[in-house]
Amino acid sequence: MKKRLQELEYFARKFREDNSLSDKEPIRIKSVLQKNDVLTIYRPISEGVSGMSIKINTVGVENLNAKDVLRFMLVNSNHSVGKQHFTICHELYHLYFQENFSAAISCAGRFDKKGNPEEFNADMFAVFLLLPQWGIYELIPEEERNKNKISISTMIAIEQYYSCSHSALLHRLQNIGLIDEAFKQSHLKGVKSFASLLGYDKRLYESGNHNLVIGNYGTLAYKAWEDGLISESTYYSLLSDLGVDISKLSASNENGED
Image 1 (cartoon, one colour):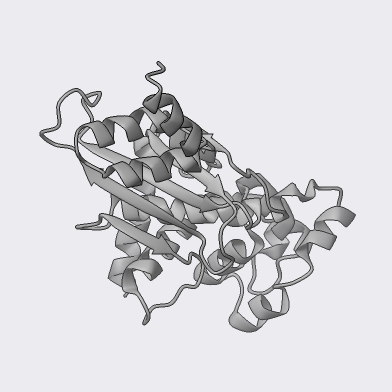
Image 2: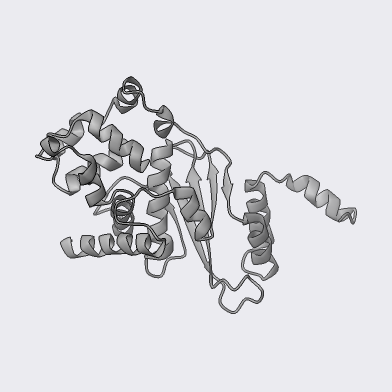
């Protein structure tokens, strides 16, 4: 297990390096998605699902902007913004590092080693990518670097800096040995109220980004359909995700409108 965790942390560092990010700075999530042409849709979906990702191999398909792979991501906008950021990093593992990956529905943040090994790998990759160890240490006062000594105000400051969920930070702190399981369990709740008392913006702990789309989603969906990569019904479903009224589109096509 230790060897696998080291490999996952290497993947996270490589992704940061490939995106011109240091091993300490926070990730601007939406900018990274746009830079890597990951077509992303935020939608309110069922609470038990954090998101999903799809990777389509386009080798041999002509005129697809010289891309070998199309990458799609769906993110649950009912979850807090901090949880959404964790979910996105989780999905990036599936899209860039999981072998033989094509599609998956995810429940990010469960850290379940036995239930689904690749989901656990994606969770750990997300922790490593979102919360680099040395960056965390720099934000912790020296007197709080002993086990179970970190204060709630310091934890919230780190969460705000890295735009991460409270539970993700607690897991990372436990992973690097700064807190134990009992400390983690005793600090799982109440973070939003503390953040308010300390004068921080609460939006990190609330839902948001409803119906946001990142990337040239419609153009590539049409091209994928035109080249036979997806069915017509799937294409219409993708258009529906963008808010296009399919009934009106069908009517205009029947009337010969451009």
